[in-house]
Length: 57
Image (cartoon, rainbow, N blue to C red; front, top):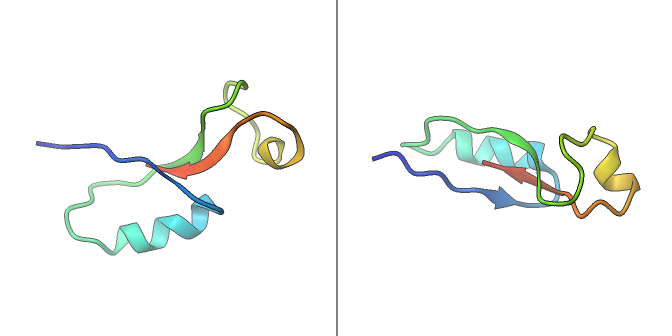
């Protein structure tokens, strides 16, 4: 059975490396989640009050 987990932390690119090294992880996708803007550009979550958070899933 395949399960999905989502983790949010400071810089999502920094979160990718530790997960890539773990056995049983099939893939990693970095990006943003939550907030009120669909498909925000990379600079937006840092510069505006969007509620968007960095995450790795």
